[in-house]
Length: 270
Image (cartoon, rainbow, N blue to C red; front, side, top):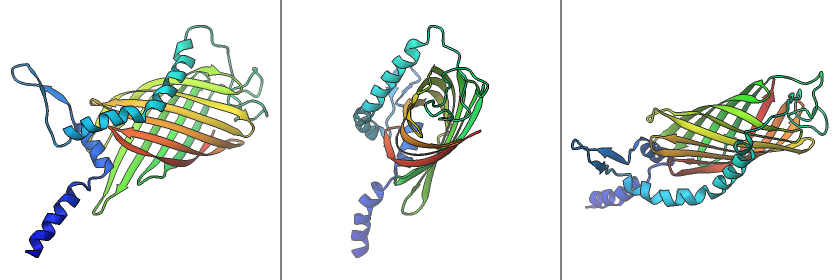
């Protein structure tokens, strides 16, 4: 009798102890509709279909700020894609001149035509996230942005992981001495049990108000198998020549699962 009572008490605990990463991977693997042999559109049913409907409305609410930022950056970058972009050089590093950030106001002998930046950051959350990213600019107006983030979540009996990689081609439309704005297109790949790739776009800006501080804000959205992965980053950076240290807040929405928290990181410019 005692054993039966213990099992009954344990069933609801084990049923609702599923972690965020496992739920996210199930949602990323799930397709909402399919076609039957007769060609009719049929809705698939699964254990996660109800939860997917439940989080859809909360997902829309949570990314309200992200959508607003995306619109602002869109009209500041894509919206002005037409026209002649003035030629700019890259400074050897931000605040090489006291009042200039990444881009030089005027062409000079000290200006650079290309750059490579390597960075890493860690997200503090019940689901930890260690990210490595690199941005190579072969010319001041274009950049290849590569990122890889490893999420890990400790559960009672095991540690769940999720790896997300992306490659973006960024167009730096606004390149002024105190601000840069860009947008990009690319692809995102989700590994582990998902193993799927999808289209991605991003928007971002970096503001250099006063030496040695800068403010970074960016939004990236990826479309994986009928689900979305949204990433909103805000960072406050402190520049020391070719190095930058930052604190910020990173907000991830992975197929409806919210993984957000403070982040710290470092960047090195080569």
